[in-house]
Image (tube, rainbow, N blue to C red; front, side, top):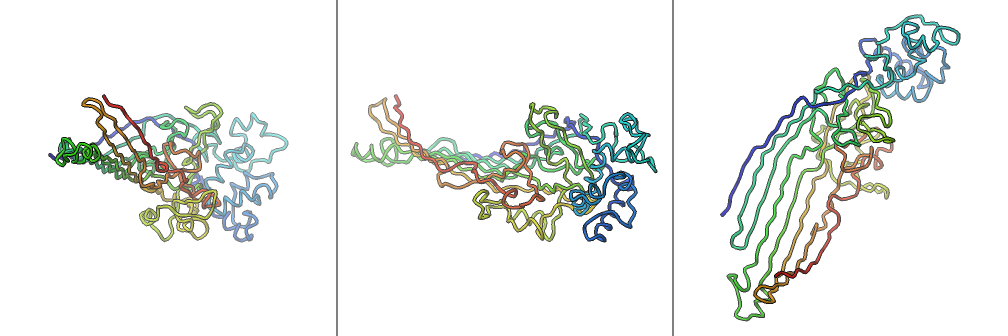
Length: 449
């Protein structure tokens, strides 16, 4: 009576549309990376007070010309960028400030001329740098230059095994197991249009770095259900000669649904710009974004993470439910000791280096529902059915990872930022709402005729 089905299911989608930014900030061919490293040496020599010093920084000096040291070379925000190795972010700062950028390119750039660059109040330009030294299109400097094309792809491969016991001898049973993997190069969708095409490459220099698991990748899924009519009472193998006894022991059916599956995946977000910089879409202007809503694109300004003393597989083994002692965020998806000073997970901090792109899977989901049915025969064609249904019968908590960008489980992609203090438990959490809820017991009566 048993049947086993084994199937392979797969699909491959290519030339999917994707909207991405062409104005990636460059720090390599223009010599800015070496200058940034000199700025780091100056900062160390000054005891952390200024990145102006004996090591030459001609691009920075010209960009910041005419400005007080305290607002540029000694500005705490700028010093933090130099300390943390964010060469891309500091270059992006220059592209976003018309005064800094016009100091570099002078009257070779018509928008600078139209804004009155040539004349009183401006520092003469000793060297006119190329207008595209930082970005492909300087006329969209400091802005996203979004391009719609079809470089995206996605594929799914799954092994599907089903075991069935057709209705017979009082038993109806089916178990289903899927081992699968889903890949994509567009992990992020616009947070407010689900699978929107708003995605950036990690870097245009190597689009393959975008390859990773799909937000819907779920490696293991096991589901089973059964109903079983207990073999007692009238019409069953075991019955009594007493009609009252038959009414008590007969008419019972047990049922259950059991689910166990891998947790939802998420990406570690370093949140720093050591390699490049992208300018994000402005509020209420991103395609598909409702008016007044900011389009969150967490990975557009992220150059990955550093793993110190642990591999991604070892960190995956640490995934679970870790209590923090903080009443506002009591549960962490990873030990909080992995983050912050000395932790194994750090944002990338070496200028000119792209960090690791690390994906992890959250805690697995396990749930059991149980039903008990008792049938009382009133007449030959009239019966009364009593149902007792236990949803999440064993009251097993199932934690979902919810990131801090918008706090919803229905977002297409989830991110765990590793560089925002406090590292835990405020940001590094698996928010405590459960996927299945607390145990619920329901009773129903049904008159069947």
